[in-house]
Image 1: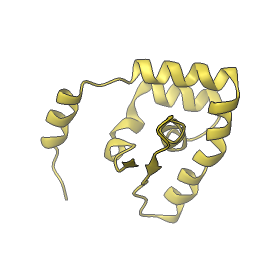
Image 2: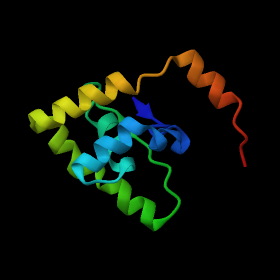
Image 3: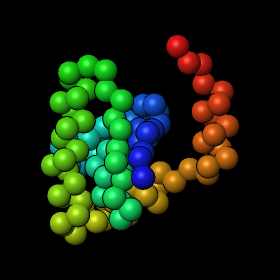
Image 4: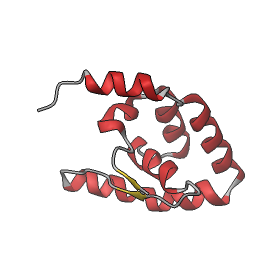
Length: 103
């Protein structure tokens, strides 16, 4: 399964639960967001959509975060909390997304 909008075009990076968890782990929110998707049991292929070298370097940190999410109790607890607190109704998501102004 290919995941095209793992960060919801950047909107997910503003979610308080994600920013708090990233701060706890000492990483950037984008790396955590991508890692949470990457550890799903359905083994996704995640497209990041980077446009700068700085974004690429930050996104690549997700590879290191994956091991922590999979291999520690702290990681499992963070995953569970994020999936619970960041859940969005699909109809609401698509309604919001369709109203966005695109460049």
